Image (cartoon, rainbow, N blue to C red):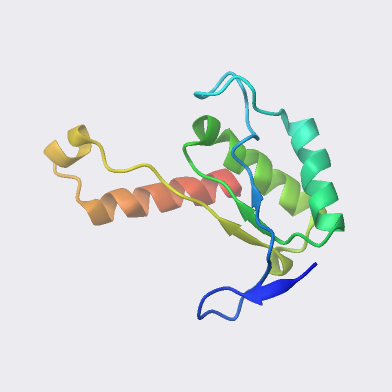
Length: 119
């Protein structure tokens, strides 16, 4: 596996980033074709064996269950300092803006939710 420095950081990540949109509870999101936790574990385990240390998920993937699966599995199979997880969040809703929630508050809330999901 080849590794590169991530941007200007000191993080060294695999050139291949494992996308995790296909992982998560099929009953809790917009896709019915996602993989359950057992199958997700098999794929992440194989990726780690091949040297993948960079994983990309999102709070929106299957109602946060992709983040939950990825977090649990990486805690079980990897050393925290050896992996990098990228995630994304949904934009602030009109209702949040109208109720006075600032963009910064929304981002902080979403970060907390992702950290909770990832464990």
